[in-house]
Length: 383
Image: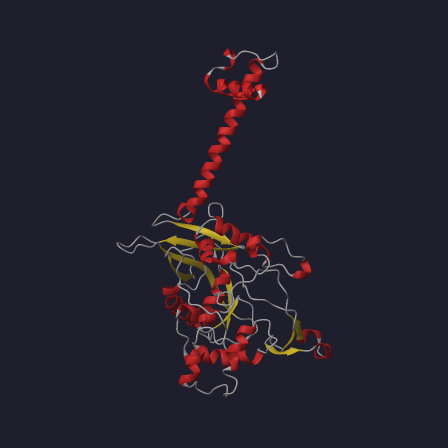
């Protein structure tokens, strides 16, 4: 007890007296000993100050990361770079407004046919879709987002454009290949990949047939796959990516549109019935979209939808239990990772760590997940 009391007195003394005036204690300290204690005390104070600053920074969250009005910055997510611009505040608006500029270059698809004016058509379609989605592109604190494609580099100087291969009609293709016949929910979904956000729906290892141009033909049994030439069959990869709610824009874009009240049109209905339903089945790795098709497959592919059928297509949940409305196409942390740097926003950091697995397949061995996206938890997106 006495020893502990003696050390406390010495530490306090070190705070108020020069080291040269402190008496030696039992020959154990002297000037060097006192200086060491003083340095440790200062170091402890620095650690406490740093911890306090970190606590404040975390408490401030996105507010400490936000761009000032009228400024911009380059954001990079999973090697996809874009320019985030915070627009000037509007009097009485009460919420920050952001424009996301994505550098892209449209090129004609090397294998699939495309109209001569594919660039104009693709540009106009994307712009219309972004404008229609903008009212539902909001952050958890009311932030308002709008997306635009930069085809000239004027808004994204120094950034390499992402190349998008454009075609007409329908084919089941990667996100970097777009058709001029896309509907808006699909355009907006695919645009999220240009921003580095991954899909959050499950995928199995099912095999499927492709034709000579690479278009999907049908799912295959193991026996059917063995009978096909290797260049006519493919297998779905199974990624390590974490899963999200079914009404996430990155899971089921139609369900996400329903949840925020964005109406799905006749064009959306016909797109799904003509192009997606033929490759859907009950064992589909994305079973939600099969539910859309059960309402449609009884009618001819080109038949106009009845008012009742179109109304059913717009029903939130489409037979699923627990469907709920959302205020935004985005879940909160999807906005955090777009707007705020992970170095100063904890939620953006968690999101970034969770999607680190997204490009890895199970064959490559999945990296450890943070708790927020382990065991089916959606906290990495929603909290």
